[in-house]
View 1: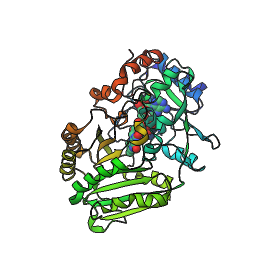
View 2: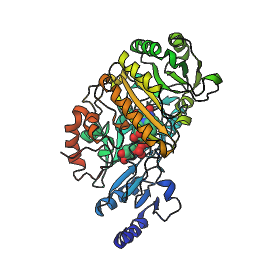
View 3: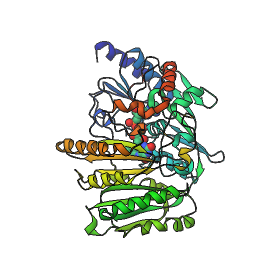
View 4: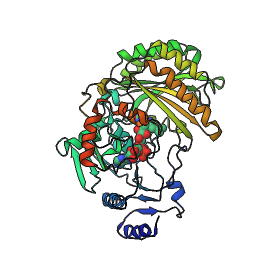
Length: 461
Ligand SMILES: Cc1cc2nc3c(=O)[nH]c(=O)nc-3n(C[C@H](O)[C@H](O)[C@H](O)COP(=O)(O)OP(=O)(O)OC[C@H]3O[C@@H](n4cnc5c(N)ncnc54)[C@H](O)[C@@H]3O)c2cc1C
């Protein structure tokens, strides 16, 4: 910070309701940490906004002082775009208020909320909207990239349920984007990531869900993986939209329902949620138990919010993470051979490969109906390289990249923007697909100087 900027910070402090953190402040260190411990950036200041007006002030301050600007929602993005070096971080993590209108089946929620905040507010009324599978993820980043989870086959991507958004633009204006107001911006927000402004409030449509749902895990040994995966593929192709079954291949954590001798051994787990009447779900999921000889299972009727948090203990903040991802429109046997080969040489006990099953309602909108283009993606595969010791960086990153290359011949070519790592700039066009050029036009209108560039960046046309 130059002396001039230090004076200006005093001016910003004068009108700011939230907190302004400088490197000399006690809480600066914890505030600059995000989910992925590989990210180690040192911003000049972190402004923790309390209100939309704070966000406006911070945007104007960043723009007028020519500062690099990063925006932090839930801080989960693997690429670490929520932080920057030397510039300003506009941190929304204190803006989490949710308000539900149960009669209209709508929720409005602020731009720093997590999925846990959203689920807690909506499930108090037996309602929900589809979001991701790890409750500490930010609503903002997830939604702006598309968003999918256990309810998506039934109710679509998160963006398919977005009704409106309050946005602070690069010019510091507060606008509402919806089908009727700024429709070009509304189109771009639904999959165009954080390129177009800071969303201070989201409004989602809600659906009756649970509050108790049939959900859980069925675990098979890796020796049965090939036939389990083949049967899984055939099963999912005929499954109703109410039923989502994902697969995770990894070493078994010490889960109480698994025999001790399975702990630490390679497994394939089927993770499922049935979004309809649990009694009907029971008979539908019965074939999943007959794909082989399960090593254990933990399936039952439990609160939707509990299932939304079931994976949190495996996905805690503070580990080192490196991801690689592909979309698939079909899963074929050659892919299964590659997956099994790489699971048999996991470089760390926390590494895993998962297949999220989309399909159903996610595939019905036209690919140009919103910025999210991948309506053909039936499976999103993510290689989660995850470990603790920096000494393992090379082996874990190498493993993820090698499997990514081995699985590439079977992939559709598209990729989910929210799973891109920091070194995948060459895949940004694939992430936005055929919608890239239209996005670049909207970018030119709302952010011609690319103030919002700490994201999977779309250059103004
Ligand atoms: C453990 C884990 C599990 C996941 N599971 C799923 C899943 O099941 N489904 C799924 O769809 N995705 C999933 N994701 C991916 C997730 O959607 C992305 O990481 C997403 O970017 C996280 O959003 P965030 O707000 O937490 O991240 P941040 O890192 O805070 O932000 C991500 C990007 O969005 C921008 N941004 C943040 N807030 C705003 C805002 N209010 N306005 C404008 N721009 C903003 C940031 O600048 C940054 O570029 C998962 C991620 C993790 C780490």
